[in-house]
Image 1 (cartoon, helix red, strand yellow):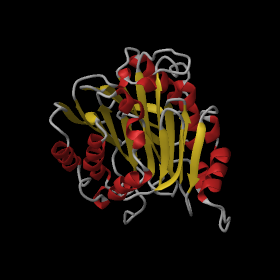
Image 2 (cartoon, helix red, strand yellow):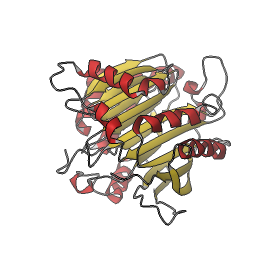
Image 3 (cartoon, helix red, strand yellow):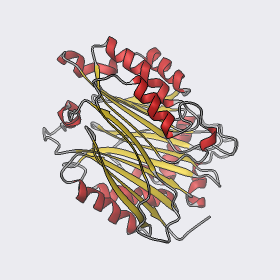
Image 4 (cartoon, helix red, strand yellow):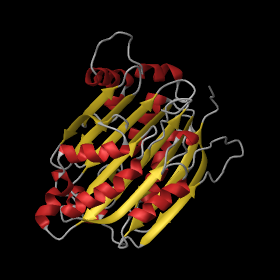
Length: 361
């Protein structure tokens, strides 16, 4: 817990693995038993509060954000003062015992609201990079770190959002070779994308919906389901299976699973440092036409004064993808104040945009 308030901005770690045994690849990291997951999360300093899964992957709501476990990919996203990167040596060791070799790493985060409250190795982006460099094996020979600043396209922009990205890869595009990216109808995806959204200065009336009623006596799961319904989060993707949790006295987390894809939302609603995040993964062949509608619904749930959107994709249709996202957000009164691009080996192109309104708290 930060001195001034709870740190909403998350740290996100994604590790990809490969192996020679087809049986291992089909089950892979999902063989990690709960005790081992608890050991890894204990190093990060968070716990599991709820879980759900399907035939593609397992999704866990954490006391600080989320964990997703696929056969050959694991994504951990944590907020507060968690020490996320301390999971790396443990994950690599456990995966090696299963016959899996790490073939890609991606670490991303926004600007911390309370940077001085962060413990090692998250005291600075430089320290985070050094920690990763010291713990990743030599086969990840394509490495890059970048802070994507707001490349101003409006002098009126007051956005302080920036995007920190570190990637390490063996040079192969493993995302598009994985079984998880073939849908149930047998169609091959023409590209996988990840959208990460950070929103601050939430509309106060909407943020209040993420506070528990005094003395309601409900467990976190029941409170979470109520928040999912009354806020409109349920309507963002009505076909998703949602695992949600409402914290006491306030705060909210959810994971939605839809086939091989997930979405996740985390909310810190307190005045003065209100924050919400939305993240989803999808394929350009299946979700491309609907992503604009999804982004509109997300904005309508929170009505932030400032937001940033990072889109990571190796797909050839990426330019059209981020344009659809931008158009959807701008149609609701948020103006694009910056836009920048960068290429990361083995990961693809990252497009980072910031949006602001004239509304201020």
